[in-house]
Length: 292
Image 1 (cartoon, rainbow, N blue to C red):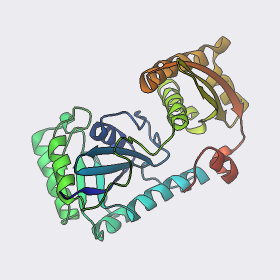
Image 2 (spheres, helix red, strand yellow; image 1 turned 30 degrees about the vertical axis):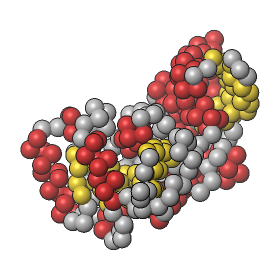
Image 3 (cartoon, rainbow, N blue to C red; image 1 turned 45 degrees about the vertical axis):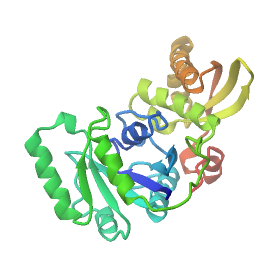
């Protein structure tokens, strides 16, 4: 029996639903989701395996023009994803275009299979979907265009079939029981960061990151100590909130999700630390795991 395996790398602009699509395809919430741009900052792999196949999905940061050293690293993840893919999935939505965008040239000249997922079609009229499919077919004539709703899990069976049809023959790259390439520490930090994105507005989520100082697991509980990094004292005060109310809210929500994710009781301790201009300091970024 032949075996198929390959890297299916997901790219696109911010807020088109890349993370929602990967989570739906993998069946687990591996990438954090919010309505804010730049939610995904690293390349996150989600692995699904069957008897005769293994698909390694990669979620990547939304494509943007870098304003910080952090953004440069994020865009390097996208560049790498384009270079090592067996199949590229370009996620878009009804409002998105690529007119005169450098990525259009790159996608046009790909020598590997390209799938275009027009996402969020549950919010659109049929005529608009057809028009958008025609637009992308003209822009990317070698691609297969598939309308989907990652949130509603609509048309994902067809999407999966299109991936399987193009997946190369290869032995599995990972053990069949592996789900991701990331550590438990990584997901603990991402869960906290997700709650920051959900609970704060304006610049606060973008100037924050989370580091796990300690992750100690026993038979019945995981004890986690986390640091939330901000750039200014004023931001620290906003994160903590009056009498610690906001930090407590974030911690309660994060602990609930961690217990569901890790399937074990969690004790979570959080501290807020000011690290000026951390988004532009390569050594700080490396300590937080941003290594392109």
